[in-house]
Image (cartoon, rainbow, N blue to C red; front, side):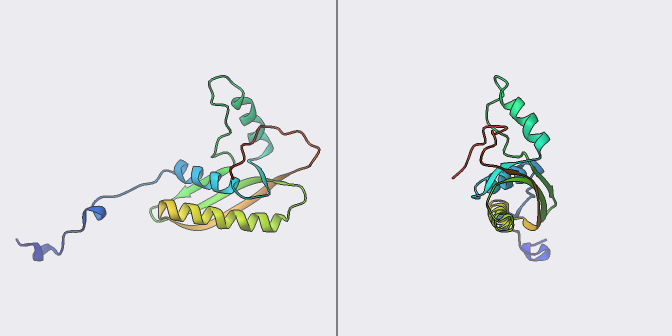
Length: 141
């Protein structure tokens, strides 16, 4: 048989399959969401409290998990995301949510090539100016 009998051999970059784990997409989305001004923290109150305790355990790294408050469902070509965020008091929740969606979609699509079909955002709390932090949230700017 000749090459024309089977069609053309695909280029090397197209031979084989690439899979992306849910955790990879969750990490990218979590970091992208934290970049948005007005996002104080990620996750529900319980997950932040448990995370803060874990972060204080010696040898645990002392940094908040970039996937906290993020859940991804990843398919072969598409992904959907659910995020839980805490916003700073005084910001427009609608504007912050829109900016989070834009930043998350841009980062995930650029880095993974997956189509982001939806980014659902649950605002779980508002950080008041006089409230003590539950955890030392690292701000990425």
